[in-house]
Length: 60
Image (cartoon, rainbow, N blue to C red):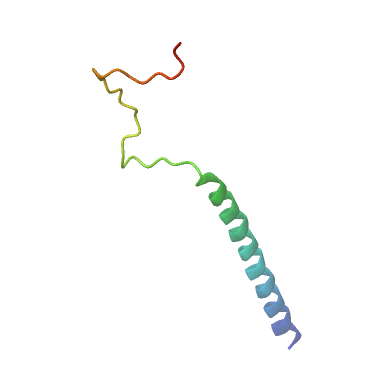
């Protein structure tokens, strides 16, 4: 009976350790996911040449 109880306690400790490791790993991965390395779109800024005069309100 005591041996069975000890096995149950040991199993519970192992489950708790695994849960704690998974939680620590999840925190690590949440931090690293803030970087966006998605290549679905172009993020380059393309200059557009215009022949129209710009309204420069800073000119004197």
